[in-house]
Image 1 (cartoon, one colour):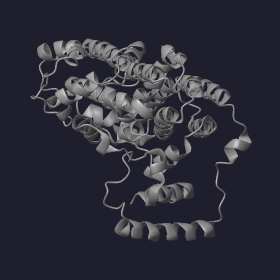
Image 2 (cartoon, rainbow, N blue to C red):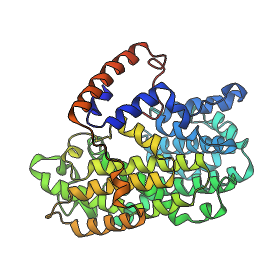
Image 3 (cartoon, helix red, strand yellow):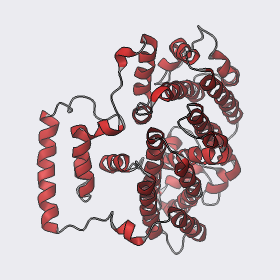
Length: 418
């Protein structure tokens, strides 16, 4: 049960209940599907099928921006599905990736040969491209441009591995930094955010790189088992002859050194994340951007110096995710969250870790950018007596069991984010 994982965190138990009993609606309002065209409803169906997490925050965006970001996501999901499909030969895949942006203006283009789990976005691409063409010109221009640049970048990396740390940055730019840039341009095009948000591509790129590097770090075991290598060779070759060797028990010390090096590299984007988020003015855009970022730093804190990264996919608790989602609704709260998890990482830094000095330096910079007093941090810490905790946990466990069997939410599939 999810609640059992949060027994030592009473605030998570409270937020799980709050979320399950309707709190999710405050951050994930229900859409009026009846007013949509059949093709647009189908796009939102595909959105919910292909990404429960992104679907949640996309559907909470305001006005026409919501539809633009939905279509942007589906177009890039289709492009990514082509890249991921190992059954497509390179001599066919490379031109598909390079030309994918042109398919947006071809009424009937589709690809029905994919074996990937998200293949419906390719087989029914005419529905997605139709809704793309229904968007306002300023949105179409952004989506087409990003799709073009991303497809070219993906094609470039198909036949080479991520070698240097600079190449890691470049790969992450193509697959995620460009997403951050495109989204920022959509925010500005909608006039919900200032033009500067769309113009500052450096900060927008960092937003994407921070999320992508976190995913790559977390997914080490799953990727290596499936023959994919996204950890940069410049990093892992310092500690092992082969990337997959890091999973061997006798290599644990070296594996943790490599892991901590990469987490430290990812953390250098956090000051840019703080600067970017501080510019946002629209509440729905802020929630959309802030929630994935705070979940990312929570994930990095969980991964840092954690041997489990080499044994399974490490994830944050569902109660933790719900708490972050419900709290990260203003800049002050986000700064507090970032400071909290930075402090958690700081407490794990080993005196013998090769990246120790760099880690301490970036954590100090993050603390400075967060600009939080110790009293603010202390306010997030709950000091409860053991007796109160025991009673609360027992009540929570019994109530959760009751809710799962009786609540009208019990069979709805649960919150999309989880």
